[in-house]
Length: 53
Image 1: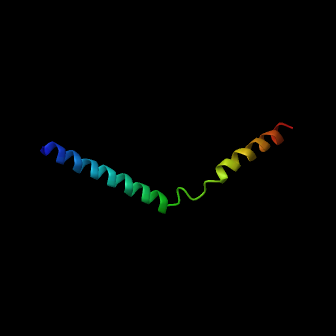
Image 2: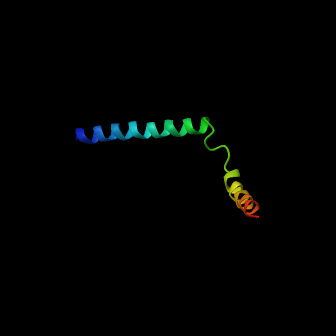
């Protein structure tokens, strides 16, 4: 029965670490710009065509 308590405590520590990392990533601006990477892909193709001419 004591093994279950140890596993629960370890899982809570791991979950809190992941939650802390997620909050840190949000505060540091990791997920701020979700639109421009998709648009940037389209502009890279046009630049490659201009260089070939």
